[in-house]
Length: 400
Image (cartoon, rainbow, N blue to C red; front, side, top):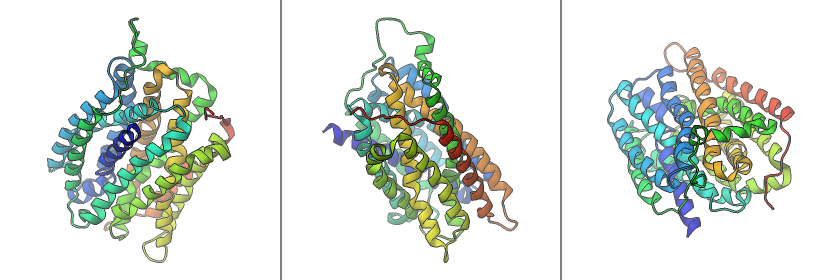
């Protein structure tokens, strides 16, 4: 029953996110007439939320209140904000609600990981089979948008925000039924300001290997932002039908590679698993750069298919590695720290750079030079991969 509850929690957590995040760029461009920097600003709210997340987690989840209760409250508040964002008729009205929403939502990514890890005795083997249900939730949202409801083709992407609000309420209520995850950092001794803010997790950065991993997480998330911000708009602009539905191919591959992750850990080790994830980013962006909806459509689909390798082999592997390195008292704060690195600092830089590149390669009369747009993140990814390969020393993270 615990496994079922954790799996459903992951399904709903990522359904809520996937319900609107993938198509937001297209929605803002087509329905609210937003330009590149405005789209970048909207996507950057994710990064602002991720930067604030460690402090919320460190202050509350590791010290005072059970993680599942905080999760429930945040999702119920988030549902209200998502509903208000859907009703906004301009970017100026939309932005404040999505900003506050992401400040509330991003801490929940660390919370669901914390709730899950606390029920496991060997996360390197057990976590992937739970986390995979989050990917299935993201797939379900994309299929509903692209195929079942056809909101993308009919210009009804506003409904994606209403759908996210409804499911967020459901997850908020369900969270109170999750396994109790009390704060392990709570004690009779009054905590210091450093402990309250979750800054103890920063001690992980004293170790060179984890510091190199942390820096690499920031840098590789820069090209990651290009995908989230531009992929759906790119596919729609180049003429692909049901782009949101087709993009679920990436999440389907994510399911497969998530289940294969423990085998890769055992066979190749942490370092080479992370390196394969980085290499996949370079390859996928080159496929996007040279593919097209005609004879080169196979390159677009192969690029989408690589999402599983890109995401699982670096982002999910990094979450497992971080849990392994964290002390018992700071597991939630440590997850918040790696969330800050990836979804926060790295993707904030990436979103703004992506917006600048998007505007730079706009074509007179409409459209964009997508080949040049995708070559930029491909170059960044290969440089980061080479730097990480030279610096990082492999570690065994399985407990048995």
